[in-house]
Length: 301
Image 1 (cartoon, rainbow, N blue to C red):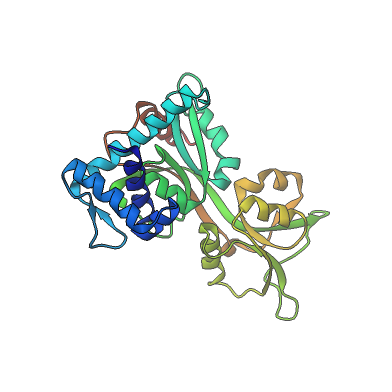
Image 2: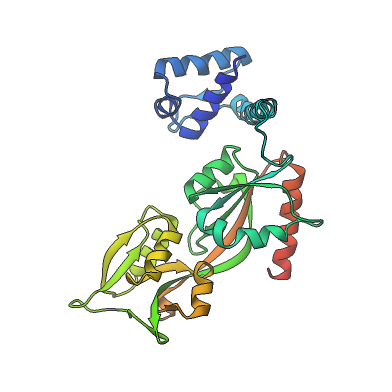
């Protein structure tokens, strides 16, 4: 057994194709394919269903995936310990968190998720799609992410369970002077309102686009980014109007630096959800956090 075979197997699961996985590992596709075949010969069973795209796993491959994740992680931890570089807290819960929630919500929420002090954790900030990938491929124990309650999840829902741990509101904001907004909606054809926005590939960008598709607004996009905190900084600098989660700009709203503009039809409710995969191998501490999160939700966090 070569540990590299397991790493290649996990790369194939992550990328969904032999070509992309080989590129990610900086090896030729024939060499990569030989690694996967060698692993299958070692186990004595086909692990990959090559007839589908993205490639799927056979029943044996599903079993091997769990063991491969644990083995690669354990070997990496042991190596770091021997080299004196172990810094992660022992027994930590790995939590994938979308970037905005990592800076606005996670810390206060996490401190309440332990019964006897903070639970050791490894915080894995990520964009929404990468966070879901981490959850399904064993890269984290729990996932904390925004969700749009108006849309059905485009993920294999049978494989996960989730709970709503808090709410937020996506709304348009701009700077204010003497308690008056510097820009107002809806704007006009001759004088469109400058707009700072996410791309439509981003989760919050898709939600913003859904709001705009139902309105008659006159907007002039002048800046775009999928880094929500960066967009908030541009809005605070006076560049225009932008749609942001309310929790992100709570302090600016309290100080009067920003104001919400437009009517309630320009807003959309956000749910903050905690996810986990449906199986029996969730670490005990992660299961404890899940239970505590459910209790906090019932108490109205």
